[in-house]
Length: 152
Ligand code: HEC
Image (cartoon, rainbow, N blue to C red; front, side):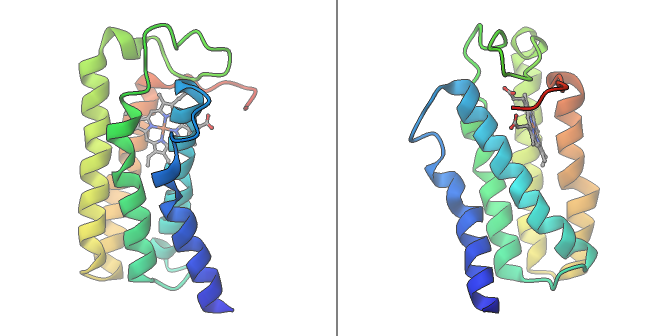
C-alpha cells in the first residue's frame, strides 16, 4: 500500500515529460508546466518540513521534474499570447524577455541545487527548498505574472 502510494507520486512527478506533446496551445502548455512545478513543490515542502517521511528518491524525482520545466517554459511565449483570455502572463515578459529568461534560469539552477542537496539528507534539502527553490517562484511571479481573480 505504502509503496504503491510512493510509486504514484513518482509517476505523477515525472509526468512533465509528456506535457506539451498533446498540445492545445502555448498558453495551455505553459500553464500545464507550471502545474507540474507546483505539484512537485507540494511533494517537496511537506518532506522538507518533516510532515511526511523524507524519501530521497521521491524528492529527487520532484526536483528533476521542476528542472526540466524552464527550458520548455520560456519557448511558450509567442508574441501576442499575453492577450489570451486565460493567461496570467504579464506584458512585461515581452518588454524584458532577457530578464524573464534569467528568472527561468534561476528556477532551473535552484531545482538542480535542491536535487543535489537531497543526497546530503533532509536538513540540506530543507535549506535548499526554503532558502532557494521557493524564492524563485516569487522572484518571477512578482513581475511577470498577473494573478487573476477567476482561476481557470
Ligand atoms: C520565469 C518565471 C517563473 C518562475 C521562475 C515561476 N513561474 Fe509560475 N508562472 C509564471 C508565469 C508567467 C505564469 C502565468 C502563465 C500564464 O497564465 O500564461 C505562471 C503561473 C503559475 C501558476 C498558475 C498555473 C495555471 O494553472 O494557470 C502556478 C501554480 C505557478 N506558476 C507556480 C509556480 C511555482 C510553485 C514556482 C516556483 C517553484 C513558479 N511558478 C516559478 C512564471 C514563473
